[in-house]
Amino acid sequence: MNGRVTLLGAGPGDPELLTLIGRRRLSEADVVLYDRLIDPSLLAFTNDQAKLIDVGKLPQHHKVKQSEINRMLVDYAQQGQKVVRLKAGDPYVFGRGGEEAQVLEKAGVNFEVIPGITSAIAGLAAVGIPITHRDFASSFHIITGHHKQDGQKQLDWENIAHQEGTLVFLMGMAQFPTICQQLVAHGKDPQTPVAIIQWATQWRQRMAIGDLTTINQIVEEQHLSSPALIVVGDVVKLSAQLNVQWPLQGVHVLVPFSKQQRLFNQLTDRGATVDFYRRAVKTPLAADLTVLDDAAALLVDSIAAYRQFVQLLVAADKDLRCLADKKILAANRVVARHLRAAGLIVDGVLPNVKLPDNFVEIGSGQAVVAGGTFLDLYQKQPQKISLPFDLAEFSAVVFPSTDSLHDFLNALSATQRGELAGLKAFVMGPTIKQAAQEAGFQKVIDCRPKVAATVQRIEEEFTVD
Ligand code: SAH
Image 1: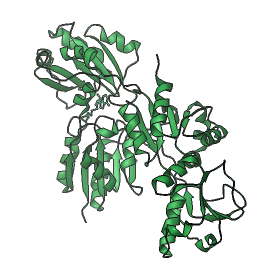
Image 2: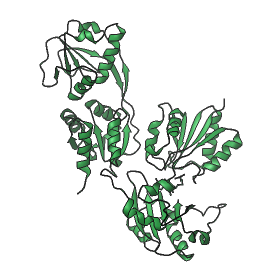
Image 3: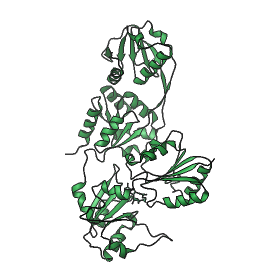
Image 4: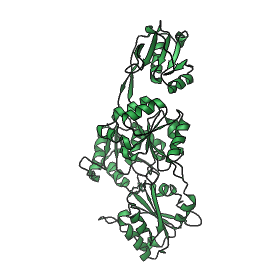
């Protein structure tokens, strides 16, 4: 059976700038080949079985050769696999998408090309530079700055320097001084504004602005380097007016995948970049619910336990009315809130509650309180944590529950555990605070257990006056 290769545009960096079909293709893929420029957070959209191949970095730190990439694309597809070749920006804007498509066509492999938002346009918008504007530029030109290779067409500097429109150079940082010199030598006004935008649309985005004579020194002073866009033209001036600043811009937050969608939305809407870590996989367990018959109270440790409890109840042809004569207690306020949303108002929340002699506790692993009958309703399997970035590249991590903290800790490698001290932990409640401190977090910030309050606290912490 013949598989298929999707040449998929990943967009400029920010994972939310991926197309909807792109997201679907990632979730369907058997094999994903990606490289250095891809924001690795995008890989969270893949399924757990997918084989992820980093062709930008092999074990010996060698890049996989283009011929090898081509061969892998063809081989996997011929084995019947759904292959995604994830490419930065748009697959057909530099980056050899066209060459890969030619190879696939020649080999008789089914392929498709899914466009992506190119950094050459979106990267400018990210710093308030419209690529065209009626007052400043009525055309734009996207040019490779990397033109030294054999067989590649040389640039026509005379022509380029005389364009009235915006010039955008990709892959140009290695040749940067030459680009500026050539433009001036061929008649471009030396005062033409220039912007350099590094890691556009990501939390590590940086920008410098100057003109054709000054920018080189600025770039050196500020240590700007590849990957970056070089923008030459009067539209650059608009950045001073149109570069919208967000309170959490540049802040890189780690949150548990994926139920915390509101947290994700509220943080990203304020300019933060949010990445996920995977929670442990929960396997439901069977239990004997008849122990409930004589119990005076039901203590619920977690919402997952409660859900499994309801499942077992219904499977036994019973429903929540069997709890009518019992007190319902929650292990913490978050559980209490979730139960309320599910239609149960609790009679008490630990630790401020007196437990009756005969109570049943539902949870996972082990009881939170001694003395009751514990029903272990699900098993947790930690996921190996494969963070898209080093822990050191995050500004903060948010723990909405003790459970989420434990899942995180259980998944860390020994090295990662040693890196916790530098990471700010925002915890939604005092119990989690203590657990986080015990785990080695040195900066733990206690937030009210509400998404909005937590986001506000994060904003206060990162706003510099
Ligand atoms: N197909 C890609 C471009 C690939 S060429 C696209 O459409 O965007 C690689 C070059 O793209 C880099 O050298 C850099 O100049 C530019 N680039 C890609 N992503 C970028 C980003 N997030 N920030 C700045 N430059 C980027």
